[in-house]
View 1 (cartoon, rainbow, N blue to C red):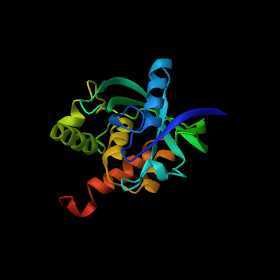
View 2 (view 1 turned 180 degrees about the vertical axis):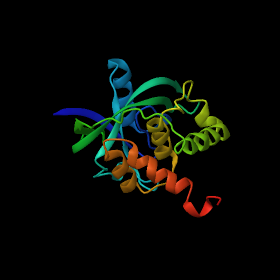
View 3 (view 1 turned 30 degrees about the vertical axis):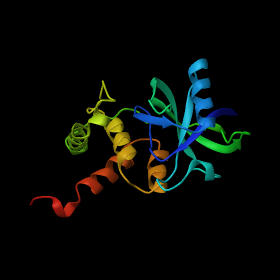
View 4 (view 1 turned 120 degrees about the vertical axis):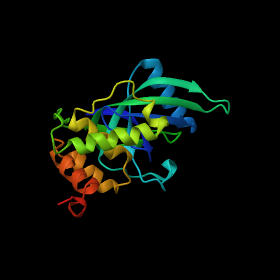
Length: 196
């Protein structure tokens, strides 16, 4: 079984996504330093916004491996990194090191294949583009976008929407983006808002 360093985090990322992280804990600085030195990925696990990494004894089964694409040191001395999601993985067990760094045993998950945006799912792409354009901090992370790929669009929505983690995990666990497309269409365009 494969193992990987894992960072529980309240900001969520899926394959193809990008996220800016501020790294402050000593164990996480070690993880990032080793990942950069060895050019290897680490994983981000989903936790709720009100949870602290130090209290984590269990995280949801599906996490995302990430690679570091940029980094810098803030004036405060904290490390800031931009990561990009690579693949989803299924975590089976967690091991905690002496400094609280978590290592996960995992297996690969089935990755979503691209799905071309069609007439129905165009709404999701249009609203996502409007959202990203209204939030410069997110928009500037993406030099390349895939608004014509419904799987990519759904993954970006699942990253930013405040949906309960168990529902996010259920949608991500599905072998294709079809269920997420239907869920998001109902959520973002409920039937009672459709003009007759």
